[in-house]
Length: 222
Image 1 (cartoon, rainbow, N blue to C red):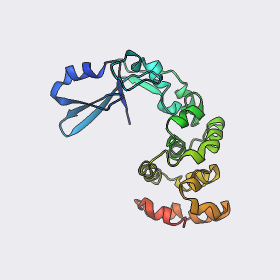
Image 2: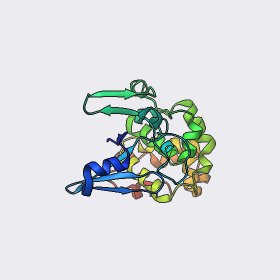
Image 3: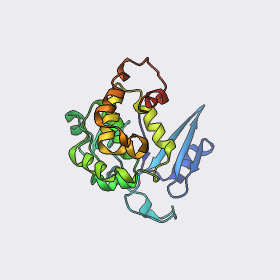
Image 4: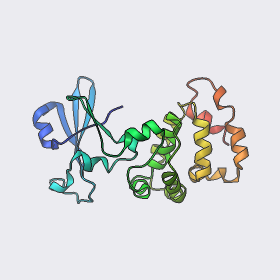
């Protein structure tokens, strides 16, 4: 799963691909490049500064070192150069992969307040790779969980549940989200549940048939 980024400005990308390229977005333009039936999204490296809607300002754009500081987790902060086959790691992402840990890039409170959905994504990555969430990152989630809604659309939360349900540790992810206060923020009806009740409800998950719809997993909680 790759994101494609470049130091070329959107207008420069458009000049190269011409009719194949459509520039979208208001504040930060992205290049959508069509190859047959596929569309490849290409982003220009950005700085972490807050800027106005004037996308022509130079301080919108940055280097790969600046761009990575805006991203969510260190394991997602690796750059691969397809020409030289080099990996650029400015955030110790390779070490966290080797150590098996989910850690935010920089201050976890800042990263989660930039996009509160990242709190759920932390548990999704934890479920996918069986990596624990690093202590300070988890502490920030416990502190900020009540701010998830209404800042994040339910459609985005549902997408995370759909992805999470495909991993063997979905039941454990729900338990950990419950302990962090995220699950009861999303589903206030579950506040009356004890941890033991929830553990009993998700215990059968490993025996569900493959490709069980996500909604059937979640119905078990109620």
